Length: 197
Length: 359
Image (cartoon, rainbow over all chains, first blue to last red; front, side):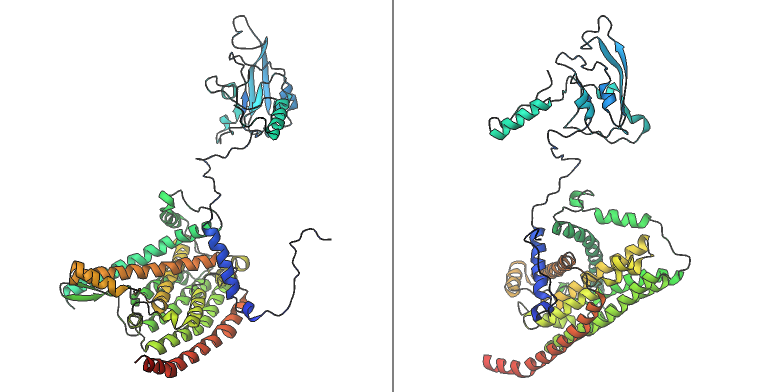
């Protein structure tokens, strides 16, 4: 069976004089390497230059706020249930009077912790969340940590900063699929990334 | 010897010595850069601008590593190995003519450490001593793989020295002198030996690769078969000296190749440059300037061959040992003999004919 048309018949025939002299073959090889010498290099200078990893990359976690700055998470625990690595832990709490500007609904997560050593960045928490509260950012990675007390990330690390909101082109699967179809049809080319409403 | 002559000579020797070390040092950097570029990478670029401080960082690392001597090793020979390798590598640069002459205060000093009338023989002697460094080190390590590597190096060097010597014999028949300066001076302007000795050049450069233990003939340190070859047991600066000696050898052999076949410090149009310079700056300063340009040209040629060494290294795979020996004994030595015969015929019959024709 022929899989590709690149296969070559191997033969054991006596080498010709030119082949025995090595030099033509060596010259050929040297020509190839010198061509590569002047080629454009593909290296990306990593810590200074970062490649765009695409809109579906799953990087560091974020707990979203809505446009009024209220936390979206209601501590339902679906993300913790969905998590195959059991990396998420939370403590639910009831919203008091006068905290309406802090939390979107009556229940909220007083403690929300992600164990970064356990997390496998599968994104199942993101899919499980009914409130569009937890996301894995596509534009940032989890920075390197070396100390034990840096392993478990609390709300101080996770909740979104309103001055520097996380923006993306599409916020749900359906939206992303529609956008892809539109892009394929050429109806839209450049979508402005936006923060979640 | 006059005092001024002595001082100029001392300066010239110190500069040549320093330059040799500097070039060997930056050859390691160059090797890594060339390797990277050929493999579509960038290579070291973190230590200093363009990674220029990388050799210093490497040397620092080498110095601070543990200097380990195996319990069963012969301690003194183990230390003598890298020392010998380094010594012989550095000795060879003594007779290489790096430039014409420098004039100062009525004295004329050659840009060359020692002007010996047996220069090329001296280089051969020192280069064949070079195998002792490897042999002694490999033997003293008391390790089978080291010893195998050392034996390979010894037999390879001896085999290829024959063909190399015979390639040079053809040059000596043409020039009638063993002095490197004499050989270089006879290639005045563009009248280089490569035009008369293309076959000899190919034989010589192949043998030079084998003598320097460079790919495709780097069997003495063949990692896939011998762990690390003769320097398996070496660490720290002793290993550094072995590697450094290899790069010095590379530079020296490149210099010898460019002196023997590519006119050394001669370049086309050098007479015109000389008259222009002496006309512009006067007899003494112009002469010195022309000499320095010649020296620069010489270094350019030598560095090109250093690059060539690296280029070949990152192109060719290494030979099998029997192929290596076949090439040496059955390929290069008969070719070298043939080359001698052809050159002899040329010198005896063709040269008088052509000179008569030109007159």
